[in-house]
Amino acid sequence: MFWQEDEAKTETPVPDDIVDVLFAVDCRSIPVDHAHALSAALLAAAPCLRKPGAGIHTIHVAGSQNGWERPDHNGDQQLHLSRRTRLCIRLPREDVAELREQLQGQTLDVGGSALRMGACKERLLSKETTLLARYVAGPAAAEEEHAFLQWVDAELTELGIKVRKALCGKATPLSTPSGPLQTRSLMLAGLTAEESILLQQLGLGPHREMGCGLFIPHKGIDSVHKSV
Image 1 (cartoon, rainbow, N blue to C red):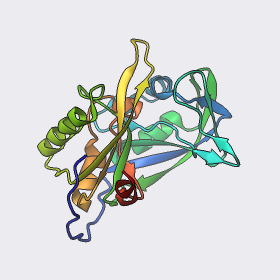
Image 2 (cartoon, rainbow, N blue to C red):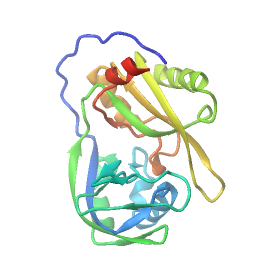
Image 3 (cartoon, rainbow, N blue to C red):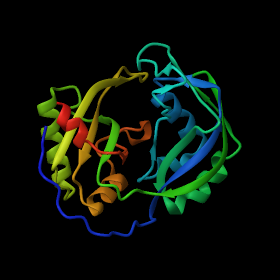
């Protein structure tokens, strides 16, 4: 764990050169471990996702709703989707029209589940200074926490991003045809708004097409820190 006190925040405009595109989806359920299946289906239907700067968020639903608990990641468990579920894709804004044309109205096979792509809308990246990546892949993802955080620090330093507060979570293997891809979750806090936007734009580590290294805003980790 790294921990350093927050610096003063300044107002920063959010650029629109990289955006998130949120698609409505019609699908009853998909496998919990769907990163590779979703990636394969989307890349086949939308070749523009192979361009630099694109990333595919995995679909994530609430951990608990009406007594329902989110299934474990491994095994043949299913995620049950609602009408409010959205599929999020991050890419350069100049490619949004092409993506919409290639995907809207298409029905994809995601691990044996039919997922129909509906209407979409754009959303700017966040300037929140606490970010979460559910999956980060890299040479240190399968190692102990200290080694993983050292790798994170070195990678972010090269991007000009200072690590002030970082927590890595559990290791999660993602299924692929060539075997499990080892990943870890990562939460970063105390970023400047500029660093936050840059990290969302660039990501961290490989396999962005499977949702790895893609950061989203998080409510914060101060309460988490107090409990550890």
